[in-house]
Image (cartoon, rainbow, N blue to C red; front, side, top):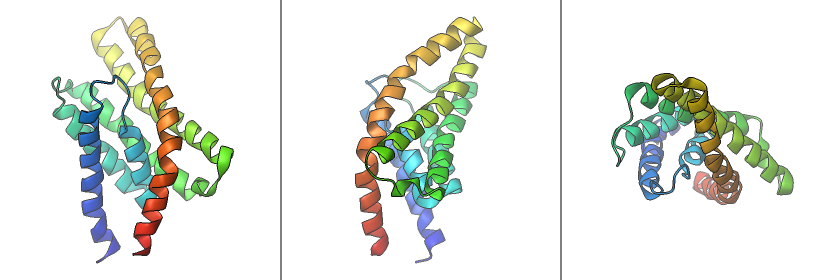
Length: 174
């Protein structure tokens, strides 16, 4: 099967993973695998598939959220913010940082997880603060609240990256 044609079900599967795994972590505020899944899609298949996985997966999640859909401006900010994680994954892969080992790899993954988290929460908190006002207290409060996600992603990325990367490399050989 053509490798480009294989991307369609993979993008759909990873987008669905974002949606389903977000349900599983919906009662843990700001702890989720969304950033990692979009990041790994970008690292596996490149810029456009990574962005699509992040955008489609977050679009599904924010539209069909168990506590109700987000307002359209916030929804757009969430979709854009998650798409950044796919782009960061593509940049990560292109620079071959995945070939790092040990503490260097862990440090790189923690740094990348921080970038993905900040690139999500900056636009989301900006739009949220712009809509609900007063701007600065709301924006600063949102960024403080995002520290939970920053900490959880600093754990999720290093723990899951190597096993997922090894599974992907095994699957590529088939």
